[in-house]
Length: 546
Ligand code: G1P
Ligand code: ZN
Image (cartoon, rainbow, N blue to C red; front, side):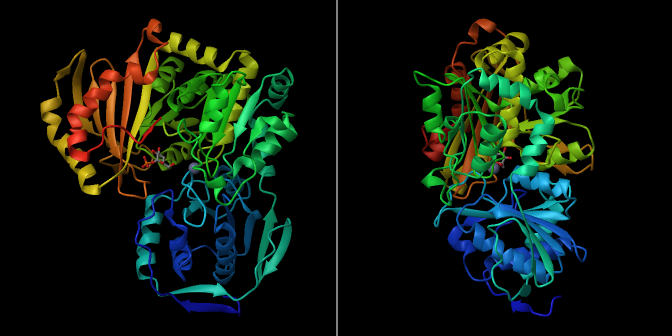
């Protein structure tokens, strides 16, 4: 330990929340309490036992408290024997960029500061998570250990030193540890340029294809400027809200039809551009829009899979694909036709990481606006946007035409997710317990034209490490391939969030003009009936529909 490292006696408050793979998320004032962040960071270091002189990557999405937390973590890394910390200039690294840098630089791991799509600001959310040397979120055995450590920590190590200058790139020393302030965008932008045909996209844009990218005042702003404007020569007017703000301009940086309303109204407007896209707080989510047209994330995964060979990085084909269980089965149909395996995993990104490390899948995605590939070990918002632009540049068709041709060929998995947020925990648990108890009565039952084939509680055995995850969501599977899935969110911060995922498989092209909520009308009523939702929660309508 360096000479001026101080052993500080840790005091309450200890962490009271089990960190998931998306880390520990709390309101900013909770993190600002004395010793709170320090206790958690020391618990990370004690759990991962870094070899002396190890390299750590550090950065965040720029939200309120980002820079203060980074200075604390740097002082603690120095006291804990790290040899070098690579930190994004001004403390910035998007989640995908952090994953990219960890892998490219062969770092021991990385700490990412973000609460993803949750609002920021002095009263907003803050978060911290640890990623391992493969660039992906720490597996459960590490996050469990961090939690255990954080409950019984008695002291942490920190050096007594002034703040490090993070505003200019270059190396500086902090009590014997090298702090390398790196340009946060270039490694990531180079990786994108190695996967996609930038010349083709540049010609598409030069030919007048009009795009809008909404960074929602979050971390992707500088990444979008470098990639779209500097490298792809898109006009400045293609960028919306690309100046990152610590409170995200008081917005909710979640790219969906509800929260990205400014972008949605431009794409639905009279002189709508050809293409619109948005990303979330830390840059790992994406939403894709055509002119007056929304692409569901489930369809997006299926379409990227079907068109992968048009893109240089995937020209040689895909090893396999994976989707989370609640994501629609649209990609399954494509995988079947391509003759490649398709894995159905529980919700959350960590399951994809194992499959990618074992080289079993190339592309993966979730219905929750997350799509990605084995180029890193996180989902990647701008990567999905560039993938779409590359496909459009080759096919020279509109977003809507590409999607409709896809439906005509594979059938359409009409899809929507209804979220009921901030339900009292008891009521939400009651809904799930009631449904589970109804399983026997529901099997074989008919609701209008829908017949329940079977119901189950999804469980998954990881084909790589053999671990089993149970209780991953209740499924009502109908004989025609339609489904309703029910699960409680693991990331909400207030009460419980019940998610109802609705999917109707429709092979009939003539129906494909119907909007999703209309086409799903019957399944929506069945979901209300079998859950006794209104009686149990008092809710008539979902809080968010995606
Ligand atoms: C939500 C999404 C899930 C995603 C996770 C982290 O989790 O539904 O797909 O992996 O955020 O971004 P949930 O709140 O449903 O547990
Ligand atoms: Zn995110």
